[in-house]
Structures are given as C-alpha cells and as structure tokens.
Length: 344
Image (cartoon, rainbow, N blue to C red; front, side, top):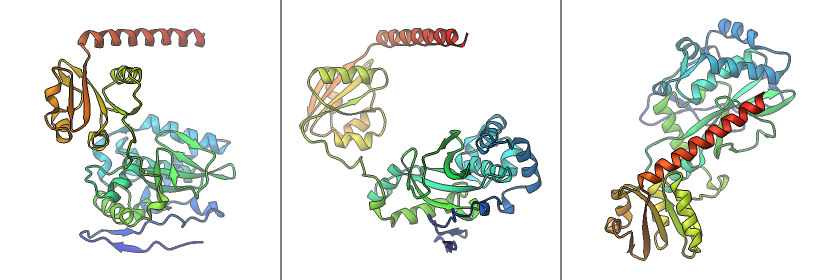
C-alpha cells in the first residue's frame, strides 16, 4: 500500500525534507522501480553506460556495474557533504561516501533493467547515544540498495560489493548493526547525508521519538557483575594482557583502545590492565584521570588502586615491538609463499 511522503519544514532550515517512511514500497510491482527521477542524472548517458554493463543474468549485471564503478571512481571524503548525482560523481571520477556511491549505482542498475530502491539506515550505537542524551560529535549511517534479482528482492551493499540473498524487506536491523528507517525511489526527496544540515535535523527529529523497543539491546548501558578485568592496549599487546589476566583467573569483560568515555566508567570497581610503552600508557593520561583521579601515580610502580578500582600498568619495551613486527613479517611472507604454491 502506497503512502505519500509528507513534506516537513525542518525548524531552522529553509530546506524541505520528507518524513522518513519505512513501508512505502510496493514490492509486488518491481517494475515501478525501474525508472529514476530525472534530477539524478542525464538519462541518455546513464542508459548508454548501463547497456554496456548489462549481462545475460541479473546477478552478473549487478557485478558488472559494481566492477565498473570500482574501476572508475576514487574516494574523496570532502565531497560527502554536498549534493551529487550520477553526472557529478561520474564526471568528477570520485565519490564522497556511501550516499553518492549508492545514487550512481542505483540509477545504473535501474537503467540496466534491475528494479532498485534506496534504503537509509543509521548505526544502532549512534541511535542509542542520541536516545540516552549523551554528547556525540559524529553522525553515523549507511545507504543500502534493495534490488530485484531473479524474481526476489535482496539487499545490496554497493560499496562492499556484497549481496545478501537471505533477506526480507521487513527486516529493520541490517548488516553492520544498522537500523533501516527510510526507503524510496528518489534520494534527493528522501534527504541523503549529502544534504548535510537537513539530513542531520531529519535524523535527530526522527530518532528522538523512535520507539526504542524496535532496537537491539543497548550493550553499552550494561553493568558487569562481580570483579572482572578491562584491558587497554593495541595489538598485539592487548592479547598478551588478556592472557595475563586469564592466568590470574580474571574474566576479561572488554579489551579496547578507543571509546574510553564509554568503557572506563564501566570498569569502575573492577581491574584494569593497561599497556605502556616507555612509561606512556595507551590511554591518554588526562582521559584516564577523568575517571580515576591521580591514576598516573601508579605508572612507575606499575600498580595503583583508585576508589576500589585496581589498575595495573604493564610495560612493553620497544624490543618486544620490533620482535612482534619481525614475526608478523615472517608470517606474511609464509602466507604469500603458500598462496603462490596454490596458484601454480
């Protein structure tokens, strides 16, 4: 059943944005999604290029389109914040992100005879951050395509060149822990991240009022019961710290080298193993001491307890780093030799 997209004037913006709608696609009539709006590019040029990529099977056609785009385009991050259609993407030979890449791919697929729908998603952790009212500095989402292949609607991630065959259009949680919230046949009317300010306002308004029961459990808002260990270090040091903790009979709840504002509060009252190099811990000292005041006093002796949290600093000298790099190079060399043997 069709539902008209109702224009919504976003406060503080002169741009009109469509209210996100998830169930507006008529999947029983895929032929409706063979034609793209005129504003997405020069129809004659798109059709001419699509015909060169069309194959005998739908799946091979999709593969040809993705291969051609991959060979023709380069990534240029600064282009991710301005509206770009097929003409500008192909004309410039570069894309700024998943949105303009999906737009160019979608119109090619349509012109090659593959019914295609654009699917907007937002990352579940970002949604929970917004709903908890926590501060955030980035906006994190992704654009997929639904394509009609061999008599069935499937999900395509064009940037990853991956088709998900066991897929239902009713699914809300998509690969990468992303929540699908808006589908349509006109990316510009949908408001993509290329329309940066309008897109941010739209997503904030939509997800602020979203029913949280539609989302997976918020794993960051969890409490570890009993005394566990949190490990802070880069590879391969976090693996070594994990082994040390397990040898002490500790259960490692989390190993990390980012997301300190999320995981350090969770570590309170537990044990923290921190890798150091030349006396410098992996975690910035100012960040560590925001949650554990004066924790840096334990770096030299290697141990300190702050408000019931036991913190161990374990030094890994440069010699260990060089040795690990040497071993890694040897492993890579052996792997290449094995691959050459298999290719013969």
